Image 1 (cartoon, rainbow, N blue to C red):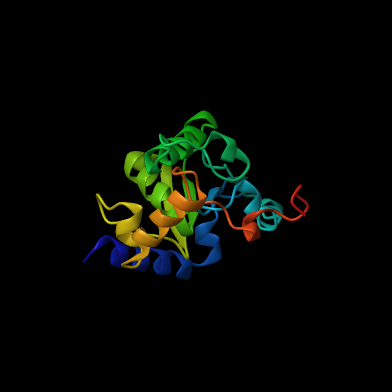
Image 2: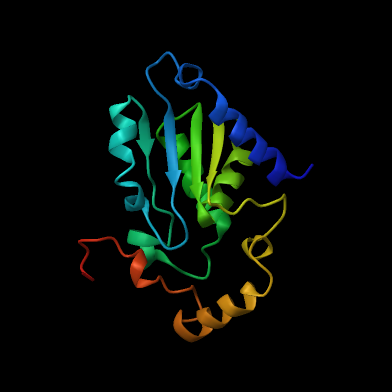
Length: 177
């Protein structure tokens, strides 16, 4: 079995557990929610209050060079940078028994930090996310042909550094509204 099959089965199995078994005695879980390539921590703003109301702790870091940290984008930013962002969130906040949730591109750094810090991770949830096999790059996980299209967009509209964010990825109420 490959990693995607195993992880998919694990997510389904965890979801099938009774709610009581999923909530630790300390009153709740610890979640680290990871956005996709065009978002930031704010994309979870409607989810966080509901989780916190149930006694869970929730962290929503914005990955370096993305969202409200877009000003930090450079050629040196990589998936490894984003893995380190998440590892730092877990380490510096003193987190353990973490449920990592990765949306879209967020599945890439979530997988990396889970490999790096298995003792701190309780569960991984992939929410419409990329699920890499060991050693795969982001473009290896995307549909065939997408790499050439994306690289063309980077060259033409992203200053040779990154794919520009779509207008729809800007949060409501921002300066672009």
